[in-house]
Length: 495
Image (cartoon, rainbow, N blue to C red; front, side):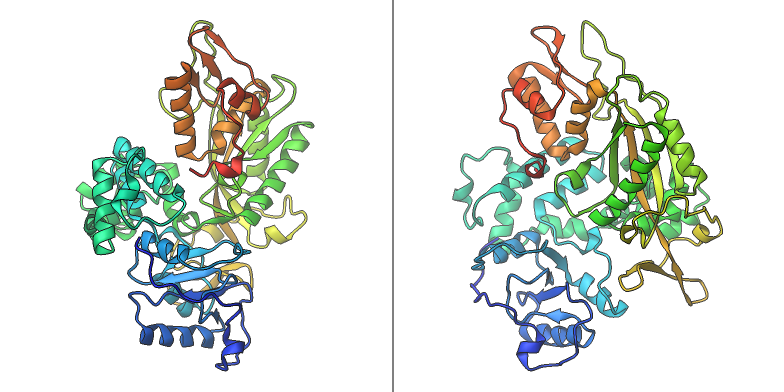
């Protein structure tokens, strides 16, 4: 977190200007910068030369053209502090990825930029503690660390002294202790120890299986299951979701691009329009907040005439299944009932809309096609091959799979998590607000409604507890107005 020695910010310093290897870059949209801190000058020079030989553009000096910063043994706080110390005169034109050295070495081995997974990302100490608490089914601790991390990320300048934190909200004793450790020692000993623990590593792996929550993962760990291999050989009877999650593990733990989300949206929109003309499909979640990558894809579906949406979901799901787009699906009915004397709030943060949780089969070249409805018949033999050794091949838009015999095979599709949610038009504004997120933003918005305004907010409705009535809204702007808040656009809700 302590700002490091400033480096001169240069323009493009790629290999062509350095008089080095003149190999034309294979990946013109990828610019790498290797952070020397903790890596050392000689190792950095060796790795930079290796990257250039593999066809990567490696910048010698940090510049606004850099798209990937590679670091070794640095925390997220340290990398962000270094980044904040640079004299950047303009915003970077593309998203800047802060990545661990593991992404670089895997890309060198593959000969192309591999898909960025969560394990490749440099994370800050408080966010890692929040993640560990959530994986351990300790939601209260998780929320506390998430709030503290959000406060730290919102500060206008890097923290170099504990005095800068005086009077700031949401920084409890534990969080302050971790921050002090990072300031004094460059990293949190508690976090570094946690990252190396078998419990944390096992929880990360097992909860990465679609359909497996923290309690199930913890039970398996107590039984001695720590890896996917051990899970497969354990003899446990898995439910349908877990079976699908294990089968498509690698795909589902890869991030989804905005282009892939829009390709799926095109399919969903055309299906919905064919079965119910006039119905509306809205892409929500992180993509609505402006993010270019996400873990899954969420859609809200409604119709401007109340009640017309009834029966829509079954028709959409049936069509998608018949055309082989769904590798797995589970649909639940709408269980929300409005009460005249109190808000019909769900017992948890989950809403009660009609919903289809699915694993979607997306052709790898789908983002580049105008239309492809009905062109993907489900080939059960094809998608039984398992989840080992899968990486993205950016040249062919296919995925390479290492087969048991050691030969590479190509899979022209990937599995993507997709949620379809149907909402009546009277509840649609609340549904859009709730499903846009982020989770922490929604939690704080509902806390404000309850504690400051004596109202109950959910993804279905807003209830005024003093007036004992529901407040109607046809847009998000109206909901913010009911809460006496200035409207916050989706792009600013990444708490």
